[in-house]
Image (cartoon, rainbow, N blue to C red; front, top):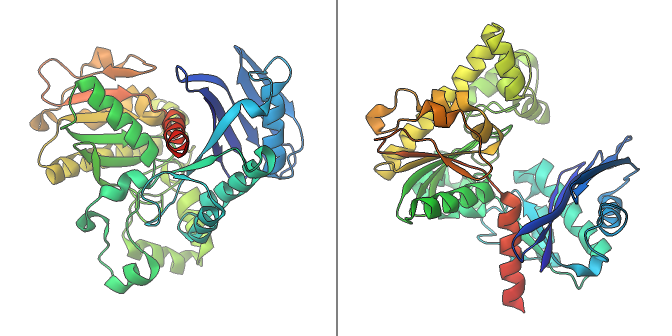
Length: 399
């Protein structure tokens, strides 16, 4: 079975075609600037890479070009789109309506669109992707939606409720939903398999341009750092993370920002970018810090400190800690950030081996120091494979 995995943004379309016989990636690529001048596709397959500037007025046009790249020329990996058995889609927000992955119907697409205010940039783009996929591949190719929020549905009420009047939850579904659930699920399962136990108290740290921390007990999420939206939690590339709500109203008074303007300020101009004044990319911030930039140093210190606090808090919430997992672009590649987070945590039983921590991996690497009571792992996430596995299981179950 060959499954096409899709992650649609408002002006982008990331894809992977995976042969589930051996779980081999046949090709992958990215369509950029959909609906914008200068759009292009980058396609990787058969050991090569091809880029082509071509107009994509809509996501449907981008899907058609993806099919063209997969079926013709040097980057071809299938003879015809009919070889694709199913399409799996990443969807950021499923709210309380979706507690598991689902085979797509028109009603499900309508519901994803209805709850878009909880993730306006992401969900509306996913809806475009779902409708475009049906246009290009036809009604007979099943589509499956895998939600970032479903892994967090096991959180108890005490963890997901906010201290606002209860009718805000009843009327407007205001609560903690979390994000990056597909990644947290993948790495927690991989870590449990690696350690040979399903009974673990684990903190999974997905660190990248967007970052979230989850407490995973016996394979189930019991708490997570992101909230109603992906703005909450630790400092991120351009997102502020947790704030005193009065900071927002005070800034509104001082800056004259309101509504969406303030949301954009917190989501797109804050975080590492806002603090450092250099970049939203940790690599650039690190280079600036090493050159003596004090604001860049501060941004790195803030992020590592906040992650450390979440690890401590979640170990208290779970009544102990067996494992810390680092994943995502920063989590997998930034040995300095891992070292800062794990520094001075021997009281908790956390100690890492500096030599192992300096190594890279494409799978799983145990960086624990000898005698460390808590295992510290780098686990390379694979959200696309998780989506493909869910898609395969649902399609086969449907027959």
